[in-house]
Length: 250
Image (tube, rainbow, N blue to C red; front, side):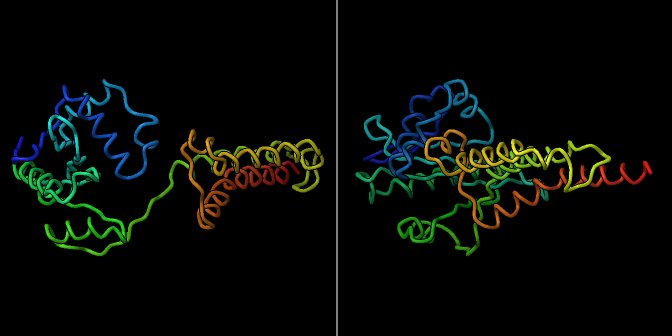
């Protein structure tokens, strides 16, 4: 723990769950993402295990025992060499307590922890347009201009699985029937069911509340193209098998 005349920096341990929960609330308020940090807050046991792990680092800035800022960071064990890096996942200071050196003190304390762990470097990302954060990090480290991509794995995997199940119905035709002339494609209820399921899948991504519950996010054209392309693969394989069965039986 480090101190100043105005605040103290405290590294959270497993018995500091109350402070960790206050830190989560601070992150939610500062980032204007209260729902994200409060809606599915981890259990006490989960937070205790996280705070007791050797890869997670949480620092809280305290004023009169109240959390006014903090850092959540991860130690990443490298594979190419026997060393580690520290990644600052979240850093925030409550609006009423900025320009007091709290953010700098948090990073300095993290540097001390990183040195004790023989970490190679500390790195952090800043959003374009977040000038205060960019100014802080520029003062404390070397800037690298890189591109950041969020790969929506949950949404893509969810939709790919859903659509692949829909297309699978076309593999249920009799092996002796034609691809576009069989009992499946002639059944109007099949098409009605597929249309209804497609609507439900789209609502799962774009309907507020439902998308929050399922943790899905809207996709761009490339994302939807990936979903449709991947979901068609099982159906195409099945159709290939059906075609083979039909001609091999002759």
